[in-house]
Length: 216
Image (cartoon, rainbow, N blue to C red; front, side, top):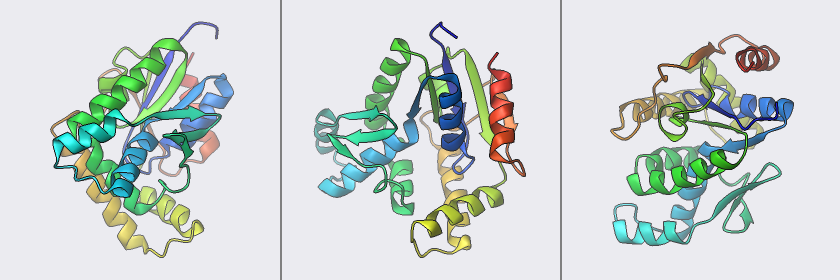
């Protein structure tokens, strides 16, 4: 596939978007842009610098001096690799909070669209097909039951040493779903021209194959 094309993968938290997008990107030989990690990175910087997100001027000043990039699978925040520190339950909530702030979305969407205009990419998030890359050649809406998504996330957090119960993770998932689907700015929804893939009960290889089948 020599032409420049964009693949947009949307869906709720824990649906496996990042795992599938990375695998598909590798098979297609294109760049994977983890937009969720970008919001987590902003949330991490907000917490590290003690910025009050209600203080518009302070937040904008922080955003103006923020640089986010992807290099060989690593997410770089202001020159620092932040792969692991942003993958916590706390940063998950911070990402959800930051994604509802217009100034944050405007900054990151600008970066994301710039990437998509220069090269073939696959992006996953909450509003890629409905907002960021409305003209993406391929759109996938990846989903799964809340219980299955919570089980996956719980296992992932336990492996990282976090002391958290399944019930807590399920509540977090359900709260994020509510926040993402009811926010005023670009809420989570399936694009009219997106293909829905329900991953409940499916193995990773089966989901990868289903997505690749849609990308002719």
